[in-house]
Amino acid sequence: MSMTSLIDVIFLLLLFFMLSSTFTRFGEVDLTTAGAGAVPGEARPVFLRLGPGRVSVNGIEAGLDEVAGTLDALSEGDGEVPVIVAMGAAVTAQRLTDLLVVLREVPGLRVTVLEAG
Image (cartoon, rainbow, N blue to C red; front, side, top):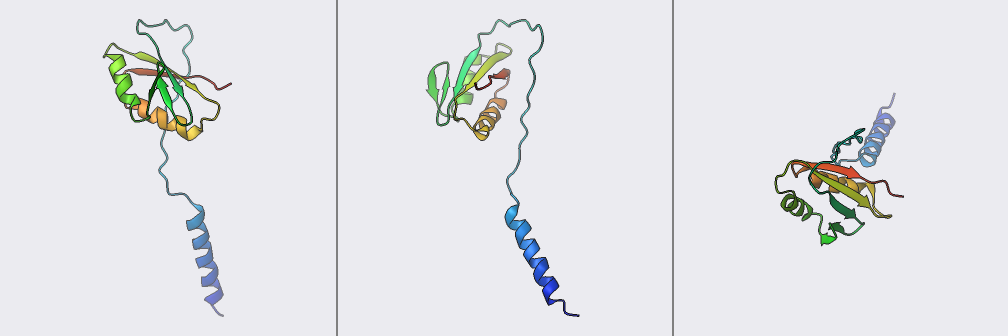
């Protein structure tokens, strides 16, 4: 019995699974629901508009890598700062995830993402 054809099939399957799988690292994003009857805090909310190629914090244009520094300067260490994120029509899920990863690095933020509609 010849094993050559079986080895060929095994190599083809190995090649198929190697080329069809992804080698990217998946990350987790914590999402919370709105609390019922929540009392608004003393801190003023920060409005963040996310577009496909730009980000604006309270109307000031900033790059995705500059958002953490801008929000850190606005928070001034006064407890939790509410951040409201509004997305544009052409924003991808990956772009939103990248923004949420950046926002996770800033301590004391309470992030709310508005539905695109």
